[in-house]
Amino acid sequence: MFALDQDWIKNGIVMNEIRNPHLGRAAATAMQDLLTRIESGEFSLGQQLPSERELANRLGVARNTLRAALVQLEGDGFLTRQIGRGTFVAQVPNRSSGSFLSRRMRNASPADLMEVRLIIEPHVAALAASRGSNEDIERIQIALRASLSARGLSEFEHWDAELHMAIFHATKNALLIDYCDAINAIRNEPNWYRLKKRTVSADTRTHYDQQHSAIVQAICDRDPETAQKLMTQHMSAIRDNMLGVLG
Amino acid sequence: MFALDQDWIKNGIVMNEIRNPHLGRAAATAMQDLLTRIESGEFSLGQQLPSERELANRLGVARNTLRAALVQLEGDGFLTRQIGRGTFVAQVPNRSSGSFLSRRMRNASPADLMEVRLIIEPHVAALAASRGSNEDIERIQIALRASLSARGLSEFEHWDAELHMAIFHATKNALLIDYCDAINAIRNEPNWYRLKKRTVSADTRTHYDQQHSAIVQAICDRDPETAQKLMTQHMSAIRDNMLGVLG
DNA sequence: TTTCATTAAACCAATACTGAACCATTGGTT
DNA sequence: AACCAATGGTTCAGTATTGGTTTAATGAAA
Image (cartoon, rainbow over all chains, first blue to last red; front, side, top):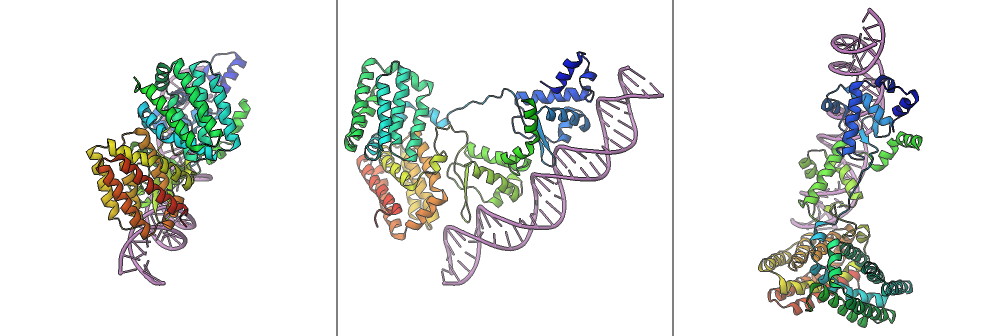
């Protein structure tokens, strides 16, 4: 891992002084201390470390000793230093970053989402019918065929999302496409998926397939009014199924 | 591999410069401070920040240093700046990629935005009329009165945004409120503001005032259908004015 | 004793920061 | 139309900070 480890293998002798003639005990512990802090995340990638004078004070060593450790860490590629600017973390192993939805998104209830979809998507269908290019419509048809022949709920979910996404893209409206991204992000939330899994049966699957086919047909026929009306029915069906309004 | 890393680190100066041009410790902390305040809600989406001179004073740094941080934040899409007008929050950090106001959204054309507003806001008005609490309606009325007595376009813009925001809040729908934030952020973009300034005259101001009053009246009367119809007319008027459909 | 890591302090070189002045644009007023 | 005030944009000289270097003193270990 370190250059000094290679020296150690070469010589085959376990001695601190031999491993690195230029690093004393205080310097070595300072270096280990710094490495530990970097790997623990106290100093993250790209972050600026405290100045040498302050860092030496914190670690309880003289500045010269600290510098010996810094030279090693720089040579091993963990740090970058520059006169007048500072010392920065250049590499940190095994750093994981998680992605998360915004608070508002997580707080949005399925009822909220369906309310918005019921407002927007019928208009989107109408726009797609009146404005979509032939390529857009082809993408829509591909998604429809794939969703019709999907086996499990997971596969159906994927192609269902792709179908709606393709319809959104046909509107050529950047905001609507962005909104579709947001909706899809919510659909991938575990809670949302569990709700859908609980409420979608084979019957409703068949029902959705018929509605999808009819909507795509209207879009292909360049019939905005019909597309809008059918999408309204489809959204209502989804909402009623998921939220139990039907029963 | 290892030698490659060494070379990479050797050139670390250049890499650092590219990553963060001329951003020292004070500037970096000022940037983090601002980001934290934005995220915490002290500066909300679309809101105008204090002037650079006052902000620098508050954060305890020189104006030049603050400006270095502002340049970075603007480049990252969190802020929008305009000479003679001010600095505005354009994006709230820590939102997922699926959330609103991505780079694509800021590039959305006024036509895109008006198309979506024409779809959504009539329904929002209806929801506000049927679902808004008395506190919500009071907030709406306050915003209306303030917008009616606003002097310059800048002040009118502010209260107009607040009025629409209040109506969105009355829907109690987290997604719709999020969408309203995004719309307000776009309205502060220099291009959008210039377009509005070019197209809004005293006549249109009077027209908007009348429409606002009628919409608020319908909401207060708990009349969803009328509110929706009036909002549709209002959105159409705005779109036609700004996009020149009338002429 | 000799050796050498460590400490401490002073100084150098490069960069960042400060504070101030001035310019350019905008919004509003007279 | 002219003007004022406020805001972001720019430049510059001086100061502070930071990594880089040298030197001397100390103390423990060989």
